[in-house]
Length: 179
Image (cartoon, rainbow, N blue to C red):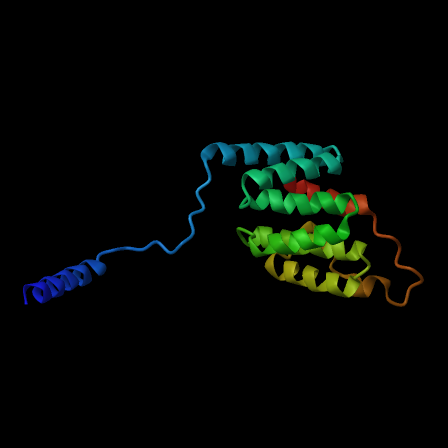
């Protein structure tokens, strides 16, 4: 009888404590401050290389930044831009579609959509590009890249060749966002 009473008392105690126990179900994403700072420094170095037009070195720096802090949106976005500048359009498209999911605000969401649109133009996928430019335009109608390239379907239809869109021109507008 004493054993049953002890078991029942123990169970009641455990159950009464269970309501007070907090279980953290969120994954811990703690990054030591040194890694975050190193990631930001690598992003700044990557941006310097982009300004100089050295997309290969920029890609290396942005990859370093992501290795140190995989949650660094800027590193992810600018890596996609650098890949596009180097002509790795498929990689750039994939990277930028991931960045789109993590855009911190509407301005960046519009920028990423417009950047994807530009990459799709270079991939000769004008219809898909128009979708991304339209999304960017709805978010930020004053976005320079959107203004320049969003009218894809009306620019070239019925004319002999719409003219080659200059890579430097499109990426030049994107590089204005470095500051």
